[in-house]
Image 1 (spheres, rainbow, N blue to C red):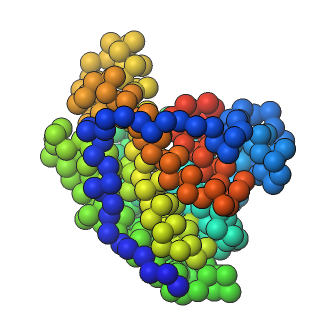
Image 2: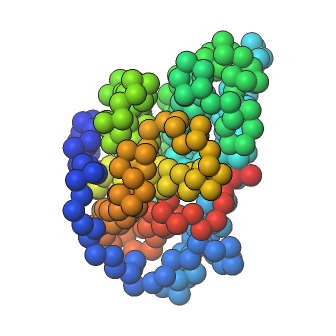
Length: 344
């Protein structure tokens, strides 16, 4: 078993000082489609490669993940805590990006998705818990999440805190209890748990939220990396760990996942800023930290271009895996272009 590093690769990105984007080149010499017209959800031949449909692939995985999540968070006593947990974790509007990336990375290296589902569900639990806590009045004070009332608005602040607190350890327990040992050795399971613990802890997502609360506009790079890049990085890395990827490939997944996670948020910031400008919504424009508000729209677009190129450059190192890498390439294009909607 190759060893792996738990050290954050934060210094890989110094986004505001990027000078140029690596030259874009065709992905595997084909055009990856993000439309809804292909009947194939996973490419297996050169002819099907050009027809790969990310929306079909992603939607099919969401259905499987939703079923697994429903099983993993049954309502028990005390019922209201579980109802609050399920309210956010089982939200049908969720894109399930962390579990989808985990499963895709696992399959890239020959792992079976059965081996990845427990970790995939745990990543979604962790994601849900972080959203519940981020929305609280003492944090980001958001009343709406994914188009409907935030958890604390429905269940109260006290119950929302408990629901988030409960989802974090449930995720770890789920990995330990349900990862099939005939497919994943215990050493890999421990690596996955350590990776998730690092991601959500005081050097990961918590650090990003802390600086966000501290009004650290000059630390926007660190905030975006920790709040948004860390979980995407973790999701890709966990998939590789489950499949037994070598350390060099794990580090490549780490850099890829971080780039995609930050890219998605930078593009989100750009889209929101454009929408707020059209509505002249000064209150929304003043909330939160973003590359647009700190560096301006054009600089944010440049950062997004560089992140897109960086993510694809990392994937070029997986060319020996053939068509299996195509979903990871298409995640990058989706993060940048938003060619379709996923989730309910």
